[in-house]
Length: 209
Image 1 (cartoon, rainbow, N blue to C red):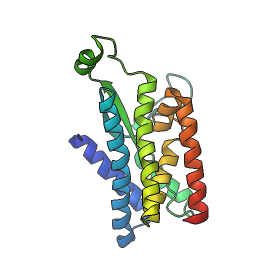
Image 2 (spheres, rainbow, N blue to C red):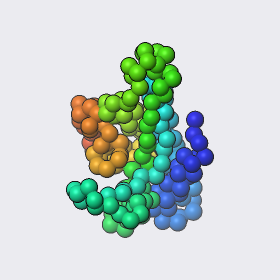
Image 3 (tube, one colour):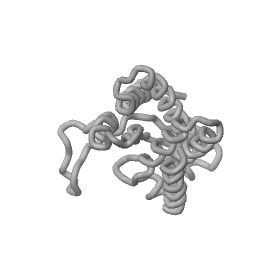
Image 4 (cartoon, one colour):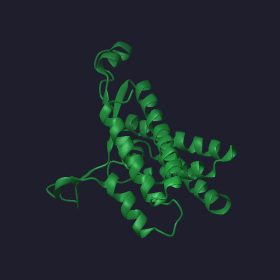
């Protein structure tokens, strides 16, 4: 289900986010790393399952920014590894806020499985992925994180619950190639619903966890 490149990307991002949160506190780093890894895998596996259901496959990669500004020719000479840089930079600027570092570091590419869609729906009738399909895949990951945030809270794992909410919060932002952008342009109703749930989740964290 995960190829070598995807596994390496997940491990790199897990380590970067964990270091940004724990600040090299060894014991906290180990616990945080495990929690972050589980949070990422929940999100990724939910997307993989949804993409399979939609007769497609996705590949996870570290978020990169290739262009800046609004003009088509404004490109970086090399893609900016935003997924690796933003957690560290956010910790520098948001240092006083507990565990609140940028966590939207992984994105995905999607492609349809033509041989399966042709069999199920007729040749060429469903061979291209629409923005709505891609939005549903992205939404599945965030919905899974929100669900497991509730489970973590009920089972007495507040840090795990908090990290799931934070991960959902950063990923729902509709910019660049993040999940929020895919969901927003795929189905605005779903985006507003998930954003509202995440907002109330953040309030719950602030006042109770």
